[in-house]
Length: 274
Ligand SMILES: [Zn+2]
Image 1 (tube, rainbow, N blue to C red):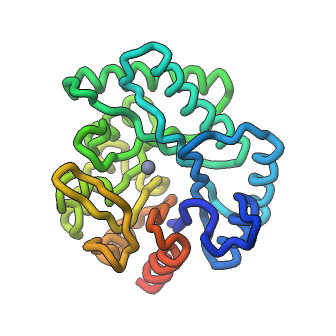
Image 2 (image 1 turned 45 degrees about the vertical axis):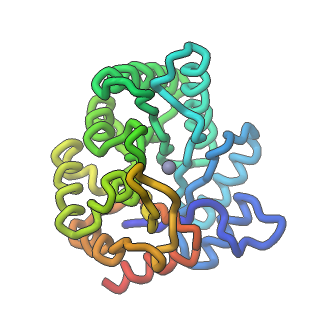
């Protein structure tokens, strides 16, 4: 099954809001998944995580996590690199307590470095993160995201190569890819090529457990500017869904539109009708 996730508690969540109420509200709207948006910081309360987990289990909601933005696995300074690893590990640890299946991370900035050297730095940091995660018996996926700006590490090839090396799977953000290339990755032909490369790198079965992001997006020469509601953007979102359907893709697609649950439901309903 392909789950359409709302990116955080729906806007229509009754006050005072919060994740648990958000899960209940999303479920009431017919949504079957939610991404926990820990983009500023990771919550550190295990009891809250247990509450999130039991609510999600009760309502059959699939959860994923978005790790903090303040991560650079290519950081030069030792302290900055360690703080980045720490944030990823915290998101994985709390995510596992909350019952999430995958944690997406913005991996790094090139900082003017040679992409191949940057790859080696990110690879070394990933090896360290995953060995520490293993000692804590963390079993959820670490998903490196395809990024929207040319200054950010995270092309499709980079995240697939890294994922293959470590037996993990990436977070495919097709809107970021569209913005980074100033308008490419917006047709059935290109999305089929994307899935072909994904399948070639990670195997056909990997298409049955994907972690994706999608939304409309505004962009300039420098890439991503901001996310847009589907209907206010140039995103050929129905064509995208048709490709996912035709290829039998399963897993979670997080709708990162500012219209939140409205666009999540729009995508889900269109997909169900296909
Ligand atoms: Zn992201």
